[in-house]
Length: 327
Image (cartoon, rainbow, N blue to C red; front, side, top):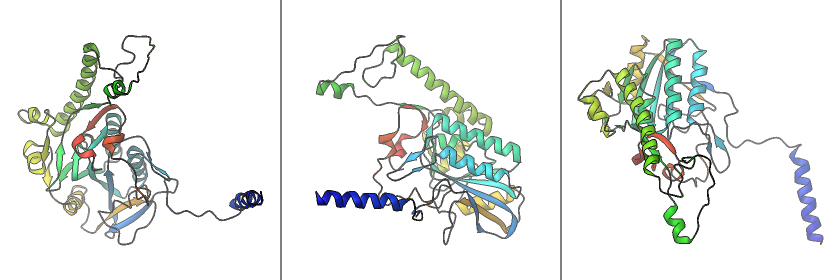
């Protein structure tokens, strides 16, 4: 009994003092404002460097301790801030992504296109390890697309992902009873096989999304046959192959992309290269992914998250599934 009372008193003290003690923050979060930090250069006009990293989504990423903003929110917030600064003459997107959801990819395509139209700023894309499918889609408004010599790009197509658990449920003796209005109401259900009619409906949707992608590629890259035929197979391309087929403009390193951005925007060699961060990093540089606009919540102390290949919800994707397990 005495032990129980002691525990109760201790809990009460903790609750009482919680309101009076200073708040200690171990990590920065998205509630803190974006601040501009200069990576190099002295001239007032500048190039803004924005990282596009991981699976493209409009859903916040939930961690063990905190959630971080979605890719869409991260990039849109940086473009909004840049639009208020007339010293930003070019935006360089450093892209390392296998793609993502159709809607998130299309939103970012629209946001980047709109920003370019409103501001007249030059848009440059520097492709890193992988810049495939939806990551290529959002790159289309760029004035120049440059790939790293070892980049993998392409996969310009659509995939519909959904789990199938009917066989497992049969083995363990479980079933799902469905009462529905409309014969196709439960189409795409993971608990049964699709009918031929449902397969055709789903394929038509996939075809519509895929044809939109290909039309935008043709519009922005001005490609003709046989390039369009090769690209429409949704195969991946190395940097050299992408240059050959007209998917990119140049091959080079990130520093080369910075130089190209300054040239396109008519800036001096000592023009600043800036980033938006929520905290300052010592020895900051182009390749700092940990210091991206969302802060350091992408660096959990213990990372027990499953790869995206195991956690993606069912849906339509501009995504190369061969790369997502490594993200």
